[in-house]
Length: 92
Image 1: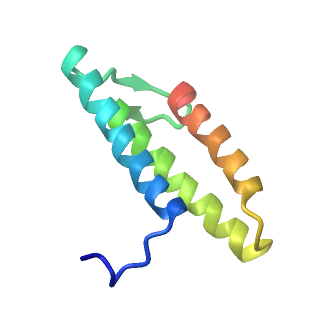
Image 2 (image 1 turned 135 degrees about the vertical axis):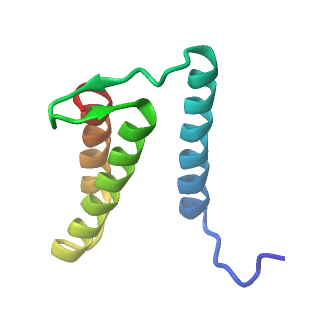
Image 3 (image 1 turned 90 degrees about the vertical axis):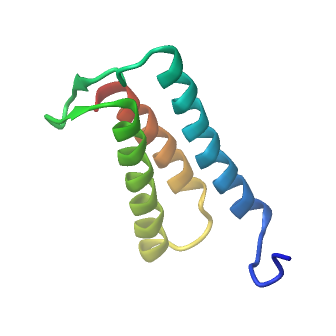
């Protein structure tokens, strides 16, 4: 059925991770409505969903820049992206 797409384990894990994060945000929104708005380092008033979007967008730029500058392996941008995600949800 999905033979037209090349599904690898890393691709599947990426999508599972993104959908799991969205699922966690849905559960948090149901338990604590309002989105936990706060003003962070960037001067933006953000909610949890905004911070997730900024985190995912920054992560994609980190990986693309790494591939353009250094190539493989991708352990370096993975560590940078985890640090970026922690920073986004802590300070942004």
